[in-house]
Length: 222
Image (cartoon, rainbow, N blue to C red; front, top):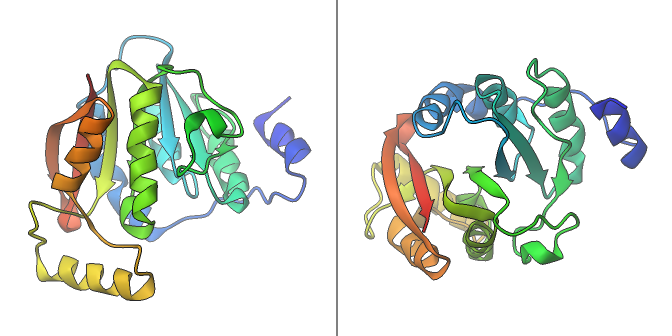
């Protein structure tokens, strides 16, 4: 049974049209370059868990570049499943699995489809932490601590402050606008994320500066 048919069986009201976000289109190339420079491109049957896949665009442009890695998209908003499936269906390398629902604030053992501990080589999360409560960042690092294999890596992308300093002014303005929309949102400080990482057996391994004042962070599972 095709991916689309399987999702229609599970979610009969899904619409299988691709959703496209301009920001994802813009950052696809720099994210691809940063990720490809840090993953194993030869070992077969590696596994990558994406948290908060959104429309599925990231998996859609990354998976064909890494045919040796199977991508597992997840999403909190079930109405995104159809778009994720559409990107997966068009993937020429057929290495994107059907999405499943994840509430990242919950322990992985309580997810709808609980993964086995230490079952993933990589995790990827883009542009989630600043538009979600701090509890989501806590949950993200908890999941990485439980689900990554030793030596595995979690990649996170987005705007970040460093040691209490947020630059440039456009990021300061962006942070202010986020907090005005929801007091629990806001650009996260890498020093606070390092604390979460240490609590879950990870450490910051690499920081890559990206276009539009974003950063690509690599977290190593110890």
